[in-house]
Length: 437
Image: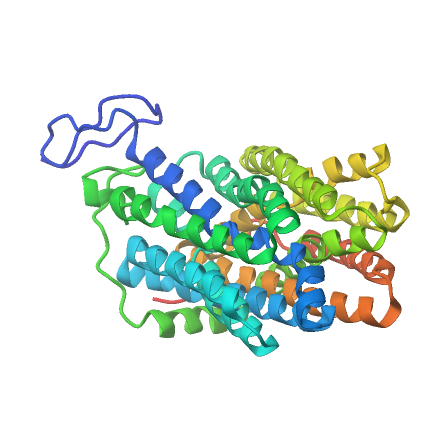
């Protein structure tokens, strides 16, 4: 007897492969999505840390902001470059194995940094180990889970899972800022290592690679057999890149998303706290503002997922980038020793826009590239992180050279205007492009 297809109602007895009622009274897809959410929070704990440590590491070791920014940029670049291969490796070896290994790598890098004494060790631990680990749990992880487990509500689920990174920031930024302020940077690094390790049992016990593993159809869809493991994952990933690179939409998506990364992870996440501290704002206050961005990021991203299910993704992206660019142009005027109402308005406004770009970008990847969309999105995400890496490094260099971050804020605002124009050029309804067999 074939497994019964589930309706879109989330609460109902679920039959298993034998036709008998299963033990999960809600669709298992929501359990998998919840585990994915918690996993991304655990992996995102480290992302809360680097912006808090520019001054402590500089004071203890004498490292410039450019040196520290280089380590952060290596982490971000590897995060992006690992993502498309992680999506293919999940096809080959399964989600549980890849994600459990990634969490372990993040924990190892964060813990090893406690004993570092030289800048090259910072680049090895933060850059290599953490970059490879977080890259394997990047947004391509969310895309893989969403594509396999959901047919209905994909935009909403994408928004919720994307917001998980912001949730991690909300939880860990104030905590890490308090630890750094009271006890130093080493206990904060140990804290994020433990956060990654705690999630591993949840992944191993509750995560499943495919609905067919538990005899279910994807949420809102028809039952399909689990495909055989894909061999040659790395070759397929590279082949998809070369095939996608021959299409115009890929370059428009990659270019606009690179600007997205430059103006969020590379700029605000990395340099907002040290920039505010340059204006004599306490680190704990600046970190709290960044955490508040995380609150509104969750709201904005989930709402963006809802909008993506209903409106043209290109127009949504154009609006998001234009509003972000305008807000960045005003930021240098808002930096003060104390938190004033205009800064609070910026934080709320920017938070709503932070990663609202992800659901419509992923939707455009699905529209253009179909079954290969998770891998294509992985490469688009790689461009996001390369953009972030460049600004994480160049922002620190600019601060060392000019003594201020103002030029970086203005340049990022102008780039966002370019991104808004790029997404409007993407053709709609061009049909699905089949890239790699």
